[in-house]
Length: 277
Image 1 (cartoon, rainbow, N blue to C red):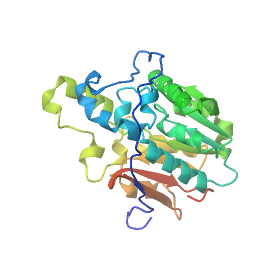
Image 2: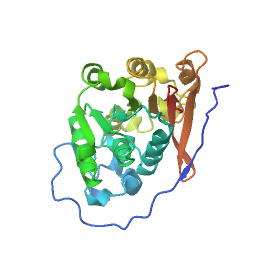
Image 3: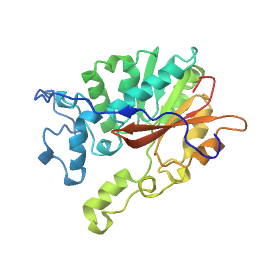
């Protein structure tokens, strides 16, 4: 990567038109998971995301479950689908497994399973509430049985249970960027902090060494012990020089921006391995 510039394309993704239905699943969400049927049910500080629900999950009205944090962090379905297509097309023939290391409520892992490119898709999530949502949401999209589910710390699970899959795998990681859960709690209790925000929102260039609770090094180092084919889903303001420095001498990292309705939403980076990212 020369001069710290972003490489790649920036596809225009528009929200699909969805006919609103009132046929939510009868099953009640477990504690910590919600399906909000209308705006007034939601906490005030996440109500703006309700209007985006069909770009987050096109089948929202079929009973999608969310945690409160997921409204901030889940990958919108059009972006998740595009990422899944790009990874499927770029992966080398020897890569038959996709591991989503921070599966959340399922935004990305559902798209990976829908691509039908992988012999098996694995989802790892340490938050039991988010994992319950992800399994339920995958059921709505008809791919729950195509995914192997793991609850726990992704670094431990990769090291102890999935290590033998490394050479056959693409690792995808959308790690926490820092500040979302904490900010939500602070805003509810301290009005003076309402305009505060994590660095990736306020900084022109975001220092990836300040991601919380995992820095760029915390994420990449253990992943690189398993495979060179690592895909990271990072803030659009990420310092690309830090990404280039992690690629190793003489190697390249591909960085792409994803846009919805003309606005850049997120950056995605590939650490170049055998696959043609």
